[in-house]
Image (tube, rainbow, N blue to C red; front, side, top):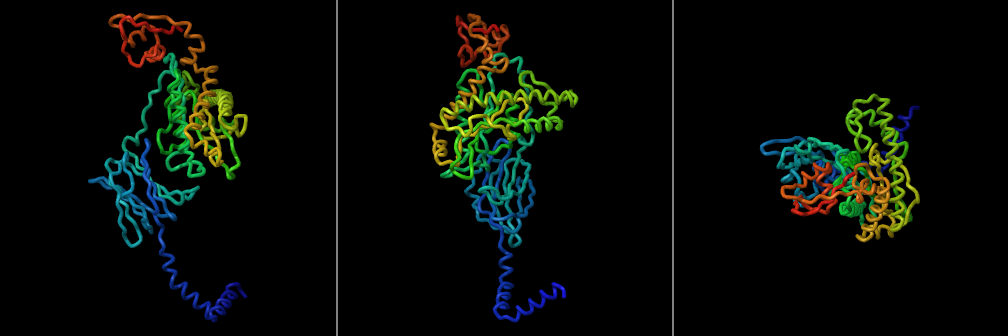
Length: 458
């Protein structure tokens, strides 16, 4: 006797029972109603950034969609199947976006058509995201304006010719935009805490002679990890600092940490640089830079390995000084620099650190991280450790290197005469106009007859 015959006979026996038959009839009657339940758009978010404008539809379940553009006037049309709209487009702030309006209409029963009115021509890109952390299913539409579709051409300055230059510190506030990072008590978002610390650190750096801070993100938007390091490289940063706040499953974990790249991560990044053609034309090795595009694989591999090894050693030394300084304002999770293959640390020629400023999941540390005073103390401590390292190991050609060589004791002087200009004096003494301004505390290029300028001679 086959299993199907057994099942069929059992089903026939069940059908003779009135209660079972009644339940099956009810199920058949309501099945179409259950199947007709649509996904719901619970909310819509729109957020501009330097790279794109992102529109996010928060959903109760996955959806299928298609989109197309129309002209005269410019519009983007999104057709979403089997979905119900509960969000209100009128509540959206469209400032800083290429969007002038959004409207919707139900079509073909259960489908929804969303029409986005555009002020500029855009290139759209859409995709769906699965649930993660506090987010459910999402439909994401990215809009790229004409300017955002063309990668800016960055002129790489000759780092050797810039005498007495500032040491450039790339300060990276982790997460941002739709990625809040860890979430602490009272909906304290990691992205907000680290942005506050990053801005305070950047302000401290910019107020100190010899330093220049570059923020990888200046607002509440998300940047991919590679984009963050690309910004640091484009700005020819000497150091890369990524600021974060840790989290754990239990609230007991506490303390700040500092990470450098692991040896395994460094090895894998070396292989990637060798494999990707666009990296060959880029520069490695800090001051002076070395292009790999004219090197064979063996020589390029040796150069990359040397650069990564030097950066790793510098990161570990610098990281320990930063960690020691942080220990004066916050408990430490571990007293030595840890190593991990964080993607954001994988720049072969820039010493890089990831700084966990504390556990945002710990109520006591979250309470401190929320306050401006502790954020400032943390920024000051990071600066203290960084400055201690750079005063001993200043990048060549920098103001810090000149100062370490007792440059202030080797100053010439020049008295301003009629017709003198700051740029002319800079050319005469083979220094930059900016270094003269910095050394003499000048805010403008204006000079006074009889004024005496200090001139570096080495």
